Length: 102
Image (spheres, rainbow, N blue to C red):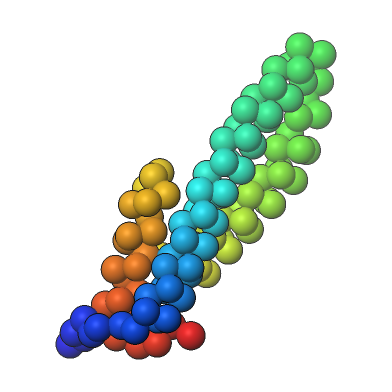
């Protein structure tokens, strides 16, 4: 069982930096996904209006990029929409881990 230990000011600063970095990465992915949806809805509308189905290609290509971005942020860098809540959650997780994250 891990117990929370007091951290030095330097460790607290590094912990805060890491938590902020992870929270910003997650917010960046959310922004990327929102832009993906908006732009691809426009491309689909243009594609349907022209009578062709070319919009599937940017949809799949960009979707693959969004998928890998999501993997990098959510799966390989584990850690809500508000940056401060995400930072606090990351700090709490890192504190209770019981090991030095560096």
